Amino acid sequence: MVDVDNALNIIYENTKEADLEKKDILSCLNKVLAENIYSQDNLPPFDKSAMDGYAIKSEYTRGCGTEKSVKLEIRGIIRAGYYCEDELEVGQAFKIMTGAPLPKGADAVIEIEKVKVEGNILIISEEVDKGNNVIKLGEEIKVGELALTKGSNIRPVEIGLLASLGYSSIKVYKSPTVALIITGDELVDIDSELEKGKIRNSNEYSLKALIKNSGAEALSLGVVSDDKDNLKEKVKYALENADIVITSGGASVGDYDFVDDVLKEIGADVKFTSVAIKPGKPITFATYKEKLFFALPGNPSSIITVFEGFVKPAIRKIMGKQEEDMEEFPVILAEDFEAKIGRRKYVYVEIKVDNGKYYAYKVGSQCSNHLMTMSRANGIVIIPEECGNVKVGDVLNGKFIFR
Ligand code: AMP
Ligand code: MG
Image (cartoon, rainbow, N blue to C red; front, side, top):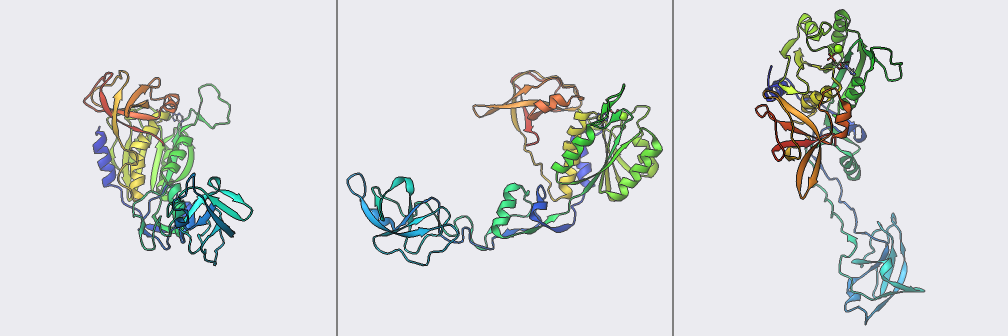
């Protein structure tokens, strides 16, 4: 049995960054940027109004207030999407809509709600500062400036930013294909009748979702019955057609757990077969040529824990990211939690913030079979190997999950 840190080091040592490819931006969600992105334009490309109002020269309003007003002639209206060639002259204003370019000679916009209008005359009774409600040319970013650095995660906001900068495609690291083999004679699909002794195959669904979330592509090879030859054929096919192979279940020491036997028979290089972690101890990691193989425990919540802990870091490294996406922070225990010395325990909890501090509350049974418990949790606290039971008020590291 290896400890969690060692297991991760072994996985990282055997994982290489993928080649690069150019992809359209919408296909890059959750991928990692493989180039620096510089702005091709000034954003915004012109001085523009931030409000529906009137474009004026601010100096006309000097000294205005309850006692003093200024009257300006309204010259016309400037809509978003249209450029006004006319220059604002002394004593004039233009009505202007949000997003429209300021006319030459104007340096401020006063909101519609703050003025009076009588026919063609605008009446302003307050001082307006220069630059009021004006978004200056290049205020967001200027031509040639660095917009995004290599290694950034592509989230919805980056997709919008790239679009506004004129990039329809970008260089990213290729996503690995993750083949999924589900074992277990007890499994039926969601819509099937639950006959005696059967349960629904939830792992296939949670794993596909986890793979998608991490930015990789899933290749689902369905359920194999607990039969060594069937499993061997599926594993060989998976290793030929994917970069990473995951099996669900069949990895422990039961009479019908064949994954470790199959790995030996095909000549895979088995690096470890269990990790000092709870939940999720029976996890095998092996390599076969350049391919990675993870045999994960069948328990529905264990499999999520070990996927997040071991498979996702490998996927993210292949995709160009080494550090964890979710940072750990100190969490104060609001209740006692039990743990055995010797294994690192991940306790699913509700983390609440109070006065700038984070507190961890129980969300139910910690039985590794229960997705219900996990579903009520928004985070985990990590009880180190040497700790044993921990008490109210103890401070441990924790993190949010699936945000
Ligand atoms: P195993 O690792 O194969 O011994 O399975 C451990 C536990 O997880 C057993 O209670 C299984 O019935 C359950 N299990 C295994 N595979 C799945 C699956 N695909 N979906 C839901 N539960 C599963
Ligand atoms: Mg099984």
